[in-house]
Image (tube, rainbow, N blue to C red):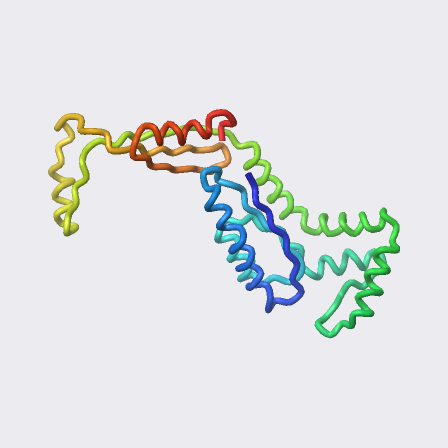
Length: 212
């Protein structure tokens, strides 16, 4: 499973807001599907601050960024000045759009290729991580069966004393739950804790057919 967002911003004053808008839209989906450890990526173009980019990266997004100047240079190759400002009149935009639409398809493709070449390293990293997420496989499933009864303490000192004096040879106590950890070939990890056997089996069965 993968969630990929795209966005264009012309001015830095809007970039932080757009980054927050993206995380607000995507992260709830990631939480809903956390059992699939989905790939999350974002493809940005125009003007974004380092702060906005780092904010997304810190939240687990794989980012590809096409800076404004790279895009302007790519359009310039086919004779179009794609630059604009807040004061650019609508008529000027219309002329630029008309110039683009009148281009031969081969020249339009050449603009796209120029943009891609200028960001090939970021794109390669993005596609590699997306491929790893799509083709990942389960490496191991670790299960810890939890036995015993819960002990509550009102101080750290009392808790330390309990652990120090706890005797592992007291015999097998009733099962109180299962901790499960699934590890994948791309480094992803999914953890679950379940109070009973039925829930634990149901969790594992959801990964059985497609192996995650």
